[in-house]
Every structure is written in C-alpha cells, then in structure tokens.
Image (cartoon, rainbow, N blue to C red; front, top):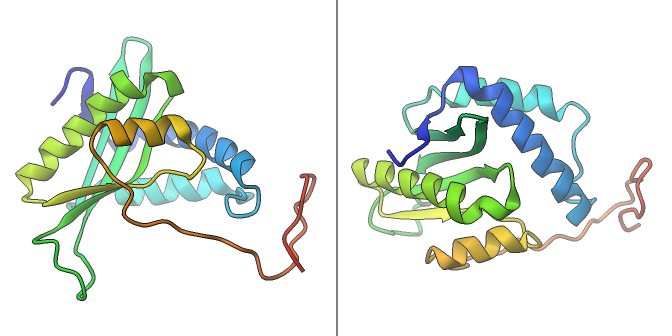
Length: 172
C-alpha cells in the first residue's frame, strides 16, 4: 500500500463519517434540493459503514498521518448491468474524501493509487468515481488521473418541498 494508506477498520468509521458529514454540508450548499442532508445522516451512515466495511467486495482505505485520518476511499467491486460488457468487474468509488480540499494531489493520489492496486489484484477492469457536479477541485483531480466523464445525472424536482431554514425551495 502507498505510504500512510492502510485498510480501514470498523474502528475508523466514526472518523470517516465525520469527514463524510463535512462533505454532505458542502454538497448541500452546492445543491440544497438534491443534496439535502437527512436529519439523522450521521447515525444512518455510521450503521451503514459498520455493515459495509467488512464485506468481501469492498475496498475501504484511510490515509493517516501522525495527526490522524485525513482522507478515505470506499470502493465496491460491481458487475455491469447485463446490457453492458466492460470485460469484467468495475470498482465504484462512491465515498472518496480528503479533509483538506487542497490535498487531493497528495492524499487523494495515495488513496486512489492504492484503490487501483487493490482493484488490479481482484481482476477489476476499470474504476468509476463519483463526483458532485460543482466539486471543481475533485473534478480536476480525477481528470488529471485520467478518469473521464462517462455519465451525468440531471435533476429537477417535481413537487414542492420546503427547505426548512434554507434559501430556495423545490418547484410546484
């Protein structure tokens, strides 16, 4: 594994979720309707990650220095839908976060390289990483690593949902 990168354990989940919660707050600012944070998001993610990390098809990594965990990546080996044939399993990096957005090049690269190494060991044929549309630093980082945009999600609300205490609201 890359320097400062190790396999995540269930003991790391609280720190991982704390970093993830920071990302949820940022994403909600990017799009307060689509990325509206659930009231009990921390509790839900704690339970989910505690269940997810021990799974055999999961690659869960943390980047750690003397100051503590400053980044993580959680990837799953997935099989393409039956209408696509990429040639094998793909690794989906759904949760990928660095504590300092300016550390994508250092911390992010170490995590990504280790995910890729582990994916090769498991015979994966590709890597997909999720990135919010307005997350420019992460988007540029992924592009520099050679990832290209292959799909986008477009969102439009279809019913009115008040954004409690927040500016704006969904469409009628």
